[in-house]
Image (cartoon, rainbow, N blue to C red; front, side, top):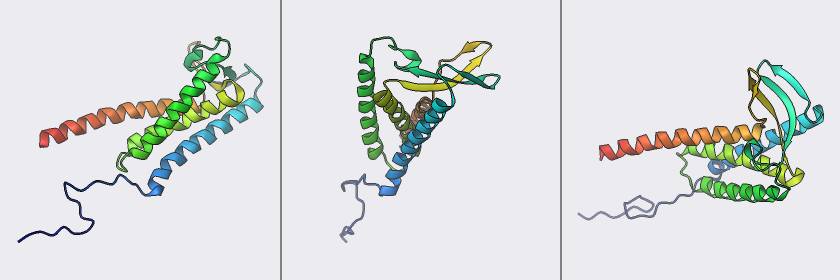
Length: 185
């Protein structure tokens, strides 16, 4: 008895469609946009509430301090003369485009990776906006312990950091799943 393939049935030879329903894909981009909006609103609020370099203590380890960072992380190249603005803007655009495509190609089951990339995308665009419009990134979160201050940062930086941590967690978890699948075969 021969088997007749049913239309739409999956066979090992059939091409697999990676198309996702639009709402599944859109939720990750919406999250990135929400990160950008929250980041920009927080920067707008701090910029209107504080004078440059003004410090307001919130907790024994947390201040709000308005500073402008023309460089990259930890003020890297902040005194380079202005050309770094466009270099970091181009890097931000390139990274953002890669992440947009990467998210679009992920399987719907890759939620943790999608979440991580969405947070990184939102943070990158939030800081890119500042750099392109203002020429510097607005930072205002000042964490410290016994007089030792971490470099000031913002919500975009926090989203990027959380996204990077989730990427590491996802890569460790995905590696364990792949080993388990290989052992079961």
